[in-house]
Image (cartoon, rainbow, N blue to C red; front, side, top):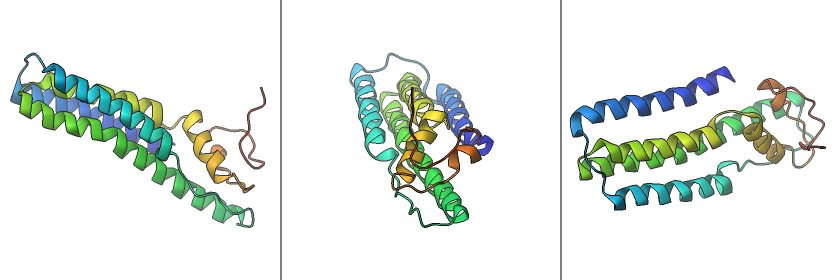
Length: 164
């Protein structure tokens, strides 16, 4: 879990460092409203795209051994995390392009801010993100033990359910 959080934290830190570097290259200036609007709309679109495809995993078979289920569950969790990270990062990448076109770091700052929000909501390993992946993996009755492996405790007796 620490490694996954370190990965996401490193991406957030890299965005901050890029903003500092771009500040010296591009300087400050009023960002064009169209660029800001485009990045905000793109952020909203990426949010819904992540909701739709970012958590997709293939359900595991209940016949898989516990070891196989754990390994495959972790592999699919990491895959979905990287997919969500890449989608979230796309807003900052477009922000870099638009910042060079507009010649102001503030455009990148908007894109980076949207990306950080997406990373915190959808990518940062939390109980919510783990539950979404585990429920997809355990949909057919398999037991992955993924919640426990990632430090979120509880028992895994099949599909994740919340009672209360």
